[in-house]
Length: 247
Image: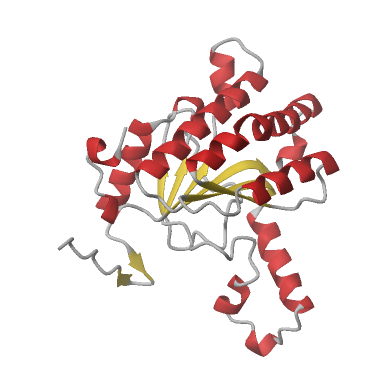
């Protein structure tokens, strides 16, 4: 579905969308399948949403793939997720490149295997020239971790405390290359942030959906964008300047 056919006004849409892709396990459970099949279906859903974002001229998409707290899950599920990531890179890397997607991985890479790190490096280097959409995959990521690593990086860079402003610290955040999200979507019916992009969502609009992630598609994305467009956005009490009409 294109932006025009969906009725969404691209000029008024979000520039950066962040998504917590929740509900994969429950989707599988409803079908009497192992949780792994829910995660696999979630990857397929992500590819569709990536295309939908491109169609709507969203510039940045950030998805929460694996939090720093997810290591507490059963070992077989964690192992399956790691294998799924490797399989997804192999299966979809060429397709993402053809779609014009630039892939970036954000998070603490130290805890994952060298094989997985190499796959991430390959995905990033192979798509570095693409400009249609920057998709950041938050893996082994936590918002608190991000703030702490930014503080350490600022100290390592020799930034004196007297110069450490919010703007200066933002330069050391894991996603300093991207604007803060305009729209935050969480699927699966949960209504919380879950330690995702804590620094960056200070003035982000939130949409919580009961839809399980493997069932999330164009219709649900358009509903979230429509809700975003209906908001009276304010930044510290200052209303966002209205978008200029074409022509």
